[in-house]
Image (tube, rainbow, N blue to C red; front, side, top):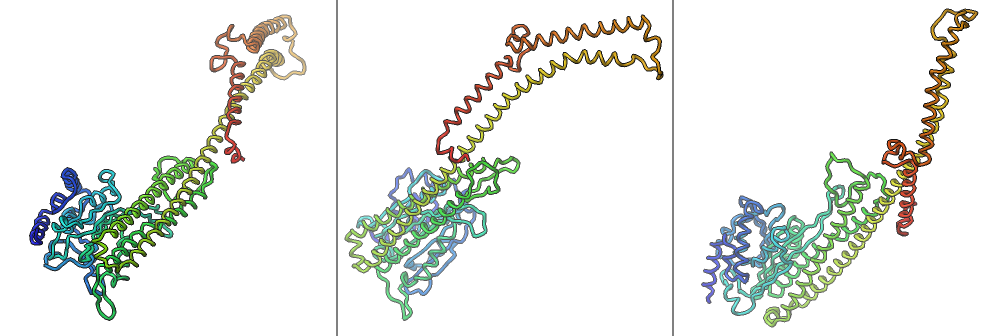
Length: 544
């Protein structure tokens, strides 16, 4: 197949960019997956993408340039309308926060023009929690003769012999010095292709913040000569080896980005956990590295808030551990990919043995970054265990406190019947002596007011008044005696435990007599004391 046919194929594919990924010249994915991805893109047009086209950051580097060229591209068709070849290196930065920083048509144009496999877009949607579980790494090299002829486009400087892979990396971003924002896990999806014949490289970086793009821009400014061959005394022609070394340096910048902040993350989480008092007492420290949303209308229990914060901290630490493990797997896959490539005769012949130092440096620094990731993984695992122990200890303290509260209620339930019994005895004694006291008090006072006299009136000493007095004594004494006898009999029967048989209504509140209530209270106290002695020894030492 001629290069002209390949150019026509690319132009036809680019005209049908809205059908991506079904319009690719040489797609290795199944037709079913391509149809599903196209439907996903169409459904996400107004949800995941910008409605109107927005400028996309392009950084292009040409042979002999002193500085990288930063361009805002809104229409890729106009940007590539000239017959100029592709730059030596092209970096495309796409913002993928709450929405993509471009329209769906712009993204399809970029992916079609560079013939990016659809698996990369599936990876981008995966870390945005859009489609399936996906994968963290993918590769698709076109080094065989039958493959590279279909993608050879000489007018653009493309040989068709491409090393390409795509991967996802994650890092953690902490708050500023006086900021109370929580730590957040940031993700980035990177596509990279390298032409093994012409040395041209393409990077597409989709990240949800500007940190990675700023790092890459800084690296390009600092090491421009590595990409373009520019020197103070004039440009030096770049070779495949130098371009490949620039590619490896860019990878190292990605790797450092995914490794640097995890140490601070583990240290911050450790400081927060150690400041939490495991005893369930009110404190003023309610915020942590992973604060929870809370409704102001609901009252907050300090102990429950501590447990909630510890629980959410454990969940966030688990997410951090998962991100570190995924980064380690991605780095292993990339290193294995390059080791396999360097064992192929086509790659070795293209390098001519000139990039051995860059390759050795890449493998050495990647090994160091992987070791740092695993050390940070151990730190986070240690903090997670400390957090779990602190949460378990706090649960034990709360359980012990609740048990003590229940025992106090049981003791109170024992004292109440005893005090009630004593009050009934006092009431009984009062009822026995009250009638006589009432009669004596009544008889010692005059029945009607009369003027003061030095001698008692004669009417009081008459036989008629004496009879009236005797009748009053008989009338009042007889009911008082009967009342005292009945109350005494009831009290004796209740103390003997037979009150419920003679008088069913004269019982305790639950239907049993007073003796049964006291026995039940003693039984509950014995059960609680038994549970208290069965507490684990590891918990009892914190109860002081």
